Image (cartoon, rainbow, N blue to C red; front, side, top):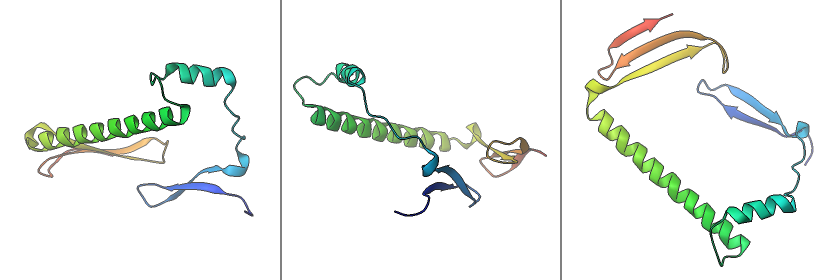
Length: 117
């Protein structure tokens, strides 16, 4: 590959934000034997080879994410069923890590409850 590889993300405003330049990164060093032993010691997967243990751990992680996603959806559905109990807080900042310029609170009916510049 020729040229410099740069990673970007598009923010909520459609602006392209540079994350990093791959040429400026340090090479990833390999896992030391001591680190490998510590990692393998934390796995409670007796009788599995390292590759299978990794596959099992990855599947468990995906299962946890799915349970968390379902729990979040259930929570949101229960919350939205009672519009008197929630509101939306919105803030505008000068940049991704800038100061807050404006805040607003809107209730479930869309009525503005607070708005400060």
